[in-house]
Length: 458
Image (cartoon, rainbow, N blue to C red; front, side, top):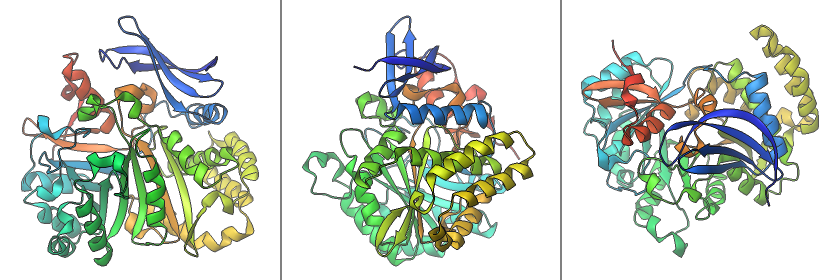
C-alpha cells in the first residue's frame, strides 16, 4: 500500500477527463512520487512520476528552489517544423494525430521565412512524415546555404530507398532522427508494430552506409515494449554513426488519448529499466549526474524541463560503460551541495565553482574522456549539433512528451522543445507543451489554444 508522506509542491494542473484547469499536488509517498489532482466533477486521479521518492524529491527541490526553474529561463535550441500532415503509417497513438489535419502543409515561402528568422536554433523538419513533402530537398539545401543546423525527423519508411538517401545527402542533410517501436521482430506481442519495421531496418543500413549522423528515437509503452530501451542500446554500442538515443515515452495526447493511460511511462521509470540491466547499485548517482547536467545547461542558457532525464554511456572496447563510473559520485554529491552556495552568484562565478566541483569529482580514468567531454560541450553550447558528438560518448535523452496526465504549469514553463506549425495561413511558433495540451483543451471548447501563440513575422 502506498502511504502518503508529504506534499513536495502545490501545482497548477488539468483534469484529464474534462480538461479544466485545477489545483493539484506533487506527493511523496513511501515508494513513489505522484502528481495528484482532485477534480470536483471527476474525483481524484494520480500518475506516478518516479519510484525513487527520496532521490526524486531532492531533484525536484534542487530544480525549483536552487535553480529557480519556476519561471521561463533559457533558450529553446530546437524547433520542430511541422511541414505536412501526410503520413503513410497513420499510427493510432500519434500525438500529432495527423488524420485531423489541424495544421496546414507548408510551402517554399514558409520554409524561407522559418530558415531566415529562426537563427541560433536547430530546425527539425517533421510532420506527419516530412519525406512526403515535395520540397524536402529545397528545405535542407537552403538551411545549409544559410549555415543553419537542420535535422530530419522521420519514420524512416522512404529512407529504405537508397536513391532517396543519396538525394538527401546531396541536399546537405547531416542529421537524421528515426522513430520506431521495435527492433526485434520476433516479439509476437508487438504484432501491431511489425508492418513497417522491415523498411525501417533497411533505412538504418542505408543511413550507416551513407555516413549520416543518426539519433535513434524509440517510442516506449509501459508494460508493452520497455525491452526496446535495451535493444536500442545494444544496437548502438558498436555503431558510431548513432550519435545519440532520444527516447519518447508514449504520450496520452492526440491520437494517443484513445489508448490506455497506463501505457504512459515517465523518464525516471525508463531509467529504472536501464539501471536494472546495467546493475546500477547506487541509483542516487544517476540523480546526482542529472543535477550536474541541469546546472551546466542553465549556465549555457539552455532550457531543459524537469520531466527529462539524461544518461550518458561510454563506448569502450565494444561495450557500453556508465559515465558515472568515471566519477566519484559521493564526492560529486558533496561538491554540488557546496555549489548551491554560489547559485545566486554572478554567472562567471557559477561557472568557475561548477568547474571546480566537477574536477573534484573526477576519477583519474576520466582523463581518458577529457577531449570527448570538451567536444560534447562545444556541440551543445550554440545548437544541439549531434553530428559533432564524439563517438566515445553516447547520450541517452529520456523524455515523455507533454500530456494532460502530467500537466504541471511550473514544469511547462521550461519546455525545451519549440514547434512551428501553419494554421489559418499563418506560421505559428510555440512550445510543444502549449500546442499539445492547448489543443486537447480546445476539443472540449474550453479555450482557443491559438489565441496565446506567437505569429512568426518578418
